[in-house]
Length: 167
Image 1: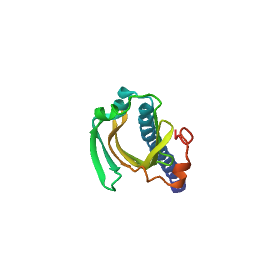
Image 2: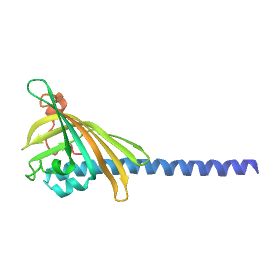
Image 3: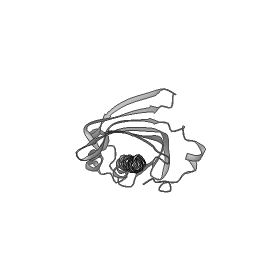
């Protein structure tokens, strides 16, 4: 009897653990999909789509390296951020190797990114997005990006637009 109970318990334990692992993998995939949707909406110059990826209160912090070596820090609300993108197809941003962490209803997506404007390499840096699970799914609550026109690695300089897109 003890042996039968142990076998049943072990089977149920493996089943439950596999279920949690699958949910975690799905959450990571879904959170990353929101960030990729943001990039797609930016490229499409779809202000409403950009706004839709975030919570109503979301903010982005940009840390931009200036020519004199100093940094300029800008805090931008989601609606104001959406207005930076007015020409469809004019830009492309990718994170070729994003990292995703999930803990319950919070997720973080971060990694190096490459940004092209008009088909030319503009700058590189690091993106970091905090997402929250809402009734409507994952939404970007806030994010931060470094922006350095001279900060691209040799590998990033060799990349071409649309060649590295993560889905």
